[in-house]
Length: 251
Image (tube, rainbow, N blue to C red; front, side, top):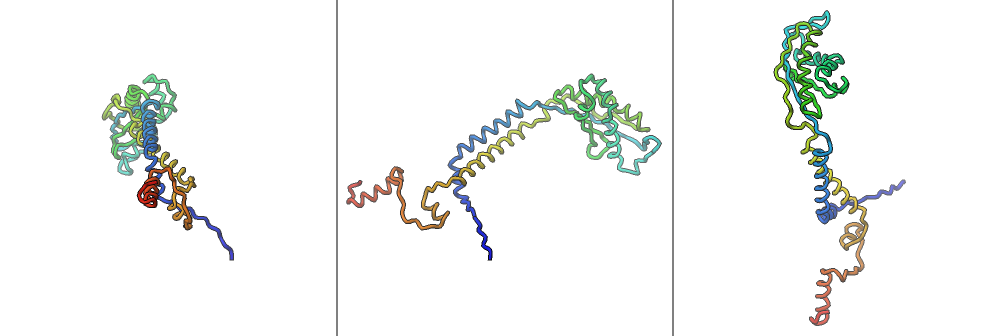
């Protein structure tokens, strides 16, 4: 019959909590340091980005692509139109015309990464969002797309009617990075790392500090103990003992 030797590791949660409490100041300083690092990273190091958005309205009773005519009653109209117009917007010809008209120093692949487009709440309102490190540039690109896109759509989709609902304005606040998010993440990382380090050091510490540790960890009887005569607690306890032994005359 085979015998399996299994080793068990007991973790004293009260001991770990005590270690965390003893090193509370170190943990607080670590949290403060990484909180400040997260704030500075978002505020000073990472370049801010801004977003400007423009809105277009699409209204078609029917439309055709090539020789195929499609009635809006045959499909989910707004989403299909949006998907069609996003594809037209992201073509190389459309983006190159936007670059030329807005006098941008990008190629069409760079510009494509800066643009997002989607329907607003599954309606026929079409939102175009441009993200840039320059707030003025994000506004200029979005409004240039509003000027260029309707003509491009009309050349491809017969019977289309695209109207501007709202032009883009210069964004006043940064879109990213979020200072609040980076600060909170820094605090959480500092808390996790400092607490983890304290717990790891405590688990690796095999020094025996008390009889209670022996009894709880190894369940062995304690035959004798050498008191710490230099500890204040030991001085009081053993001092009173010697005082009684010497008839109250002290040590």
